[in-house]
Length: 99
View (tube, rainbow, N blue to C red):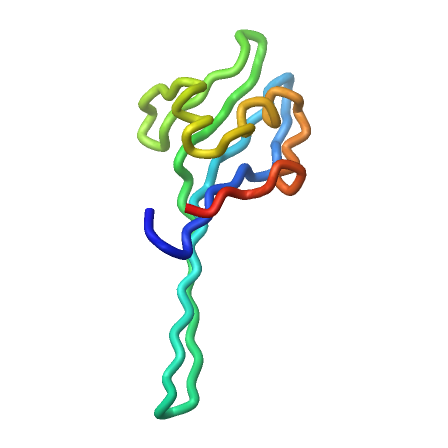
């Protein structure tokens, strides 16, 4: 991850006794051209982990399906596991982590 990158927990989705949320890497790049007085921007949202809670507890995996541990999730965004576990899904309450 480079400059201008932020990791955050997206809002929870709930259905049929399951909760799901994604940890997402957000980028924003802004370009300014002094010669032409032009401004351009581009951004992206890329999932880096998916958290799932159901009858069997909480699990996490990378977008490619590789299982991830709680420690790996916390390394990406401290407090994400607890926020998801509490069911709040309010990333604003814990803040996003710039990388």
